Length: 101
Image (cartoon, rainbow, N blue to C red; front, top):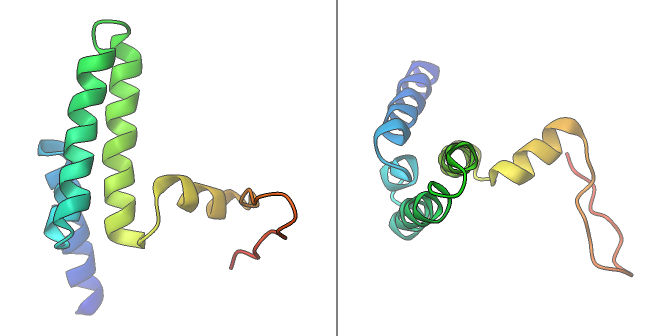
């Protein structure tokens, strides 16, 4: 039953992201992060749509995917992808790389 709730909740979050950028974060109760994703999507659209509509579309999809990833995994899209492909995270000089699980 708990798995069913998780699937339904994640489906609603994904559907929300299609309609409103940052919706999945808002549904999690992270209002500041949800609004930041929403404003970032608007700024990216305004800045890039006249210059390169394809790049604007990719930016919007990346912002929506980041919001969804943060709400489901508590990790940014970049971090989740690095962990998935096994790429070590970048650390400042002199500080050893952290082991990823």
